Length: 400
Image 1 (cartoon, rainbow, N blue to C red):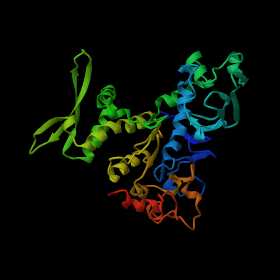
Image 2: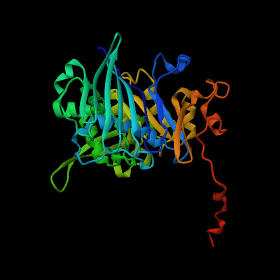
Image 3: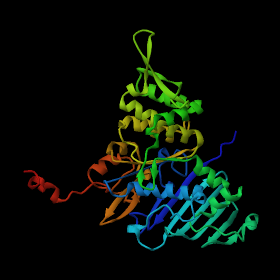
Image 4: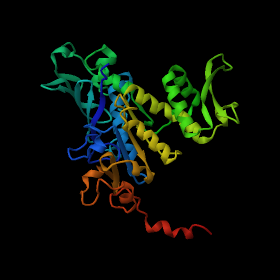
């Protein structure tokens, strides 16, 4: 069986939330990157974003979720809706977005210029060895250039707040651009327009995912039992609510002395077990589908060793056979022990604007490859540390 590779290669934006001048993120390893880090790959399966509170880390990931959502589902929105993003302090200038993504044998390049009110221009290119094709371009609401196989749409009018990709795939069942929509349908994120959003706090909804897929269920059951040997795993018991709807209740199997075991319901588990149950469904689904997992605050309520185990599932080719990717934010400096400078982005804020850089952009004389990033971070040699005003120290006048 030949596995089809889907991978984000690069993305970026300007005039987007706190990034006025722009932000660029690359999964690509430089030629000088050691092979013990690349593991023979040209692109990383893992990127970490760190920085001080309110520096713009979530917004860096939000660029990617916006592009995906716009490609995938903007056609379904009302013509009166604004495009779901905010420019830098809500200014009236245009914003720009780009994405480079590999899907199977093709690399797609996507460019978008827009304001929250309307699309100004949008274009999609597709290339493989010996071939580079401009699939489609629109300016305003009109398609201005198109590949031969998309000529039937040349007179189509596009809604001002909708992507041409979403329009052709959702509205006209186009197969040429469908791989782009399919990729984002399979992706997962805990970020929305307003920032961090965890829909998996609803364990009943999560349990439905587990019931529908034995692979997801087995992955999480084994993962939790590895973390807590006293737990053998969990089973799903079907129940009926007052309205007659079926739902699934997770019952965790705990080992007792000898060969005895006892089942305890979800609400009687530790907070850590609950979090793993709810969050690992994202990890498992990404690995199963070969998609990207966009995860804000991966370190929230999880021990660093557990985070390392999650990261290992993405970097280990034997466990990540479909080249799934993970991009995440963290405040936990201990996590930097598990990452290289080629896999770590720092986000800084200058006045009200943010900017970002990958740590390998810093001189090799400052950051060596064979040293832990955490030591450089703790010494404030790579940035991303909070700086406190002297005003914070003068709070005694507040308390009487």
